[in-house]
Image (cartoon, rainbow, N blue to C red; front, side, top):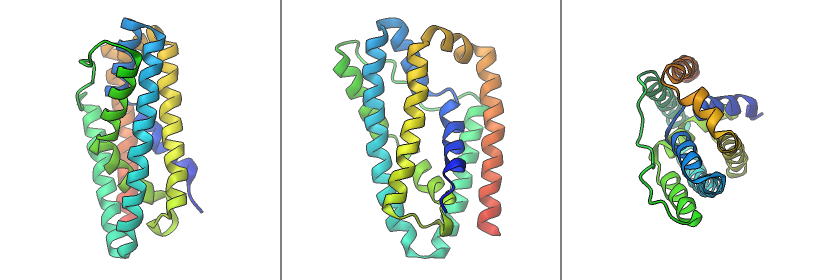
Length: 203
């Protein structure tokens, strides 16, 4: 049986870690208003959906090759989570798309779509982490799409909360002192998930 709750928790840990989409949405909403932020969310959600769908297809093909490859993917998933934990701990990451030209809301949607569709980190996370929550580590396409929908839904819910409470969210999540505490707590949690993936691969 698919561990949807465990997968949702892993996604939640990643999405709650302050990152480029968070920073962009808060900055954009404060600068141009709620409509601009909502336009960007639409693009981000579509980009994440397309990225996840392609990743599910890739994972279903790759992992059908045999159990040895599934074990390798588990170790790669552990490395991916450890890397994300390190990035969160040292307060870095990929660049925020705040330099996107300020124009019509369609521009923000297009920018959000392109940035998230072409984000290799998102694809690698999905290809490696998703199978860890499926018995046998070999997801069927429908199972993968179900998990993709959960992932995009969680991300979109968090993004909507940020836009509708931009000023409050900026004070809570983006203030330097608080952001460091949030990142480091989540980093430790992600490192624990990485350790679990290693144990699963070697067990």
